[in-house]
Length: 167
Image (cartoon, rainbow, N blue to C red; front, side):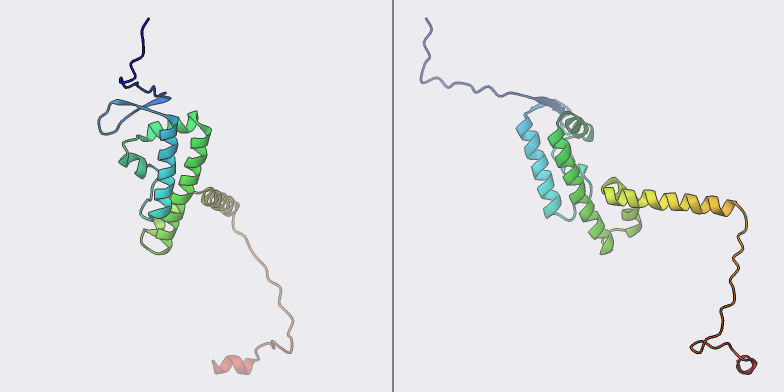
């Protein structure tokens, strides 16, 4: 019978739940779900604390995690997807404030905000819809608007010919 030696260190078994390709070494690295959760928490904290974090992938790239890996984690783990949505919202806040304070180009921010904010996306879709409607209405031909003459009132009398000659 084999006896356990109390002086011998026992190895702990770590359950690997996923592999990802490190951007710096291009090697497959094991990662646990708890580590993925920690990365998501740190990314959200970074976005809230650092107004210069302007893209969602900025933090993960620094950590060696590719955008494709992040996308697969979002598909695989619903809670990671929820945290990702919160991260997008925090980055949207940074971008919007940067555009409002002219630290970022407002036109560029306006163009890219629908990628980060559901409200901006809805706003831009509505704007495109109105533009399309206006274009369709203009293609129907010339519109003539007839305005009826308003009657004179004591508050707004009509101009007399004498008044017209003075000008």
